[in-house]
Image (cartoon, rainbow, N blue to C red; front, side):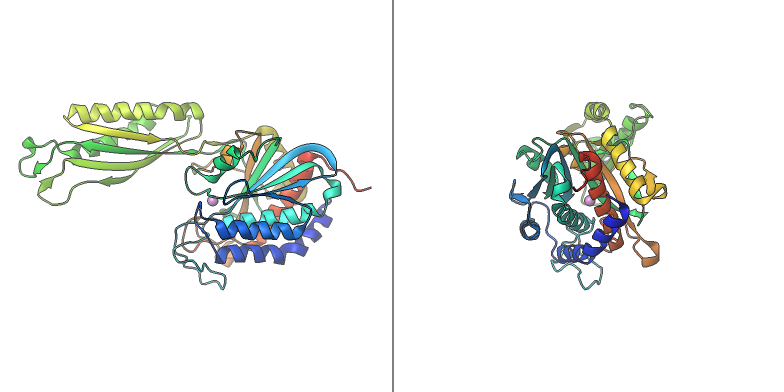
Amino acid sequence: MTTATLSDLVAGIQAEVVGYRRHLHRNPELSFHEEKTAQYVYETLESFGGLQLLRPTENSVVARLVGERPGRTLAIRADMDALPIQEENDFEFASQNPGVMHACGHDGHTAMLLGTAKLLAGMKDRINGEVRFLFQHAEELFPGGAEQMVEAGVMDGVDAVIGIHLWASLPVGKIGVAYGPMMAAPDTFEIRVKGSGGHAALPQETVDAIAIGAQVVTNLQHVVSRETDPIDNVVLSVTKFSGGSAYNVIPGTVEMLGTVRTLDPEVREKVPEIMERVVKGITSAHGAEYEFEYQFGYRPLINDDEVTRAIEETVRETFGDEALEIMRPTMGGEDFSAFQQKAPGAFFWVGAGNEERGIVHPHHHPLFTVDEDAFPYGIKAFVNATFKLLGETETV
Ligand code: NI
């Protein structure tokens, strides 16, 4: 579609899209509890007409737009959940749910996909095949809503899937695209070092869990620096270390929690075994025992080259070459990867930061917000990517 025409159409619904976003921002709901959000999305989609609506799981919504000509099926996904954070913004549309906040921009994702559905529903005669809008619950909390939606069959018959994330560290007007690995597998672990407690003045009568635990932390860093290929990306962070209760007591146990981030599924598979060998070696060397639990989280998000190329071309053609940023991967996680198990897909960033307007806070911060001027970029990218991926049919 010509950029001029699309710009007019998008400008025409911008106030509405901002309205959706502000409604969602005011009424955030936590992962797996998006009852009112899903209802709002369902009713809004219903008001557009021309869409087949489904509720594949309790808190998700799918809208199918079946074009007038046969063709492929493209799925477009937006996540809808908020975070357990107390908002500190003083917007008129600030969260009315204490301790719950849209602090990652998912309100904007949902609003942009609603706007996209509205525009495309009005262009049914130009659509080949099907556009399937996936409004997903629970991106922020493992095991995630995407996996549940996939199990419910939302990806059946889908040929390609795309999704976006508003990104505060990218200025409005920029679209970030990444080929191949884009986001990490966010796995988690729990370690307990079990020694034997006693008087702090008589260490010889104890097996000091703190001293041994500290060595476990240090030696776990060797998993990254000495046991994996430096060209592979691995993050291993111990994020909680707890034990002990008094200045004169050596504790018998310490507990640790942490996360491992990898981009390569093969590297990911081998990390737990190496970690356990290290934990076992250190604890047994000092006469302690251990417990080790490892939980695989979301899969790494790996973009398909062909779909990503279609997104890159869409960005260049719609916004000009200067809008495109080829991005490095980040070690954050995203359950969009679940949809990519069923069809080739591409996830991309839509710049939403704006220093001049003070929109500078990172995602998950109590003062986080997005620049609403980013929404037309997301909608135009979705609409033009749809025509690029499904093939454009000019109106007769
Ligand atoms: Ni997010």
